[in-house]
Length: 190
Image (cartoon, rainbow, N blue to C red; front, side, top):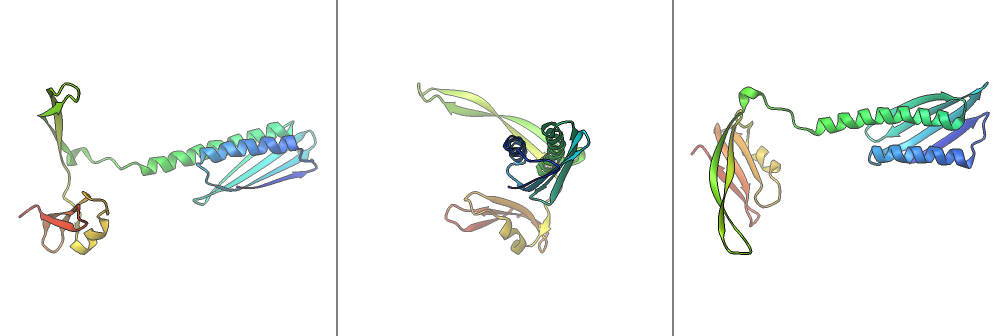
């Protein structure tokens, strides 16, 4: 992070520089190290010290805050607190965007089936029955696409699965990455 700390009619003391860097490091941790640069300008006007803080982050976010107090330390703290509030808002929006959208209630029908499952006790060699739940979910049909479009969506890890509706055949198909590295095609409607 680049820091530009300027003072107009004010000398920047090492203690004041330490306060600014400490608060900006806290802000940088809040944003997971995405601060590119920060500009802090302090200006004395009569009996007040104005602090203007501008922070540029990755993702084209410019956060700015203005603080006014009798001392330079208090005005910088107030300005950076405003920037921290903006950063929490940006962070909340980014985290909310990562969540999947909810499926409409009409599109999902869940059926819970209790199925017995046997688990062995490692110490005694005994078996005990544990019930496992199978949840059947009905969703709208898979997205229609060609086989050539579905292949890049398949992960390289063995056991990866892609379910799609073949646009040419209008059938539900499943691609499975096999343990030997090849791709298996399962025709679910056949």
